[in-house]
Length: 124
Image (tube, rainbow, N blue to C red; front, side, top):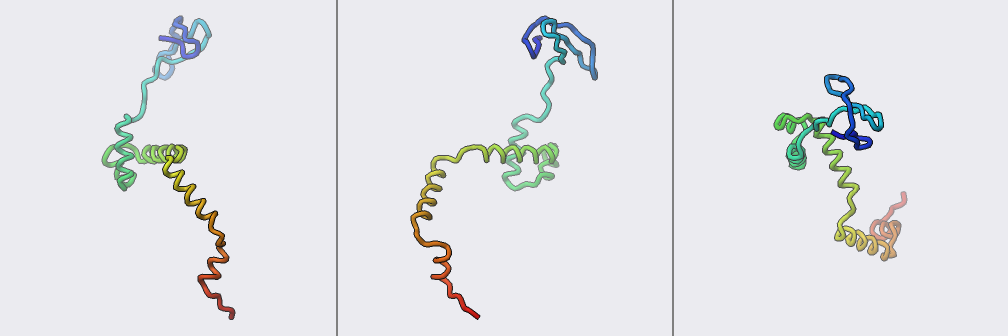
């Protein structure tokens, strides 16, 4: 076992807290708990829930089917959406956006001109 701060292997047992063994590093004096077990769901469970969500199944229906809390699934969906928004657009999408923007800029027709040409305004 190594100290998480300095990496030293010179450690002593230092009591218990909430049923877990505490350790103290002789080199830096930091107190720590042995390597924590990973909590949470597997990546497979997460991917299955996200696929079910993308297929249009509701959060609570996914919860009933998989046993994963609907609040957890909502958090996963939020994380997925944040990751998708932070990823850059593929080159094809950027070139299409640039093409559409250049077409809009090249036309000299303004919004006002469009409506006055296509619609007759009656004065009452």
